[in-house]
Amino acid sequence: MTSGWDDPVPNPYVELSRDEWRGLRENTPLPLTPGELEALRGLKDPIDIAEVEEVYLPLSRLLNLFFQSDGRLRDTVSGFLGGEVPPTPFIIGVAGSVAVGKSTTSRLLRTLLARWPEHPAVELVTSDSFLYPNAVLSERGLMDRKGFPESYDRQALVRFVSAIKSGVDEYAIPVYSHLEYDIVPDATQTVRRPDILIVEGLNVLQAPPAGSLGVADFFDFSIYVDARVEDIRQWFIDRLFALRRTVFTDPRSYFHKYAHELDEDETAAFAQRVWRDVNEINLVSNILPTRSRATLVLHKDRDHAVQRVRLRRI
Image 1: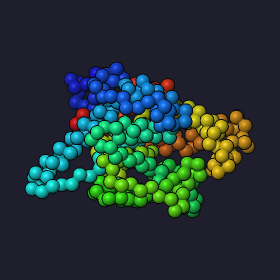
Image 2: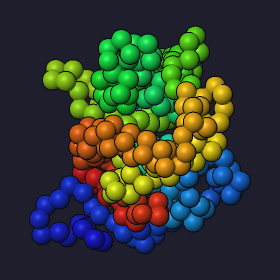
Image 3: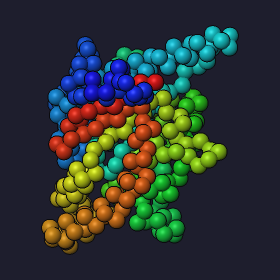
Image 4: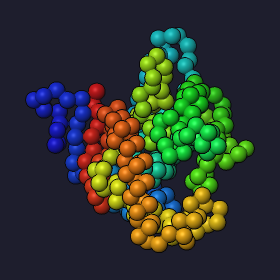
């Protein structure tokens, strides 16, 4: 191991190379076809079946072991109290930068985990559902800081995750449209007592203000999808060009004008400006500092492939 159990300096993490990590898959079957993977991966995300087998199957096995351990802990508490403690959802947080691939990771884990016999009900929620509507952001002068911690209704997100962890039967949350770049009025997503809930978002590992709870306080396991800043920058620019050729051509798209009013040079300048003035600032100031709070870090190389895994062992 790159930095393992026998390190001379005490270290709460174990670092594993890709080869070491894939060896931990053991006999975990591959319950996914190439066609299903195609439907799960994001725009400009080159993930393939080999990546699933070597990176995400060991991760789904680890998460299943954590899930089973959570049940044993609940049995221990039940025995101590002398009465049954009802099961509540196992909650996984997935964090990382814009364009790093955390949404693909989350969708893939939802599919893989739902095919373990122990937990067929797996729900995925994105923190985008808790962004303030554009009207509110505009009123507060925050449209250029969309995705920064202050652009979210963090109290509403904490109330939701707390309620789910407490075992409520169902909970309705807002719906965010990436096409319209806004919360959809009167639309809701209802979460109904899942076995596992995955909460994905830029800032879901953010530390709360002093004296209050943050959403990460309710996570049973957390994942940070990591890469070099310069690589993420290029992925963001590449993805924006791909969106310009696809999603932005829809007249309903908030960014429709960029599909036909800007030439390629102007689009490149726009992408670089948004990255420099918004996304990179958010990444360096708010998102990257939360990496150390994650249970597990997936570090991607320039080709999007995960090459190193860091796991908190205690």
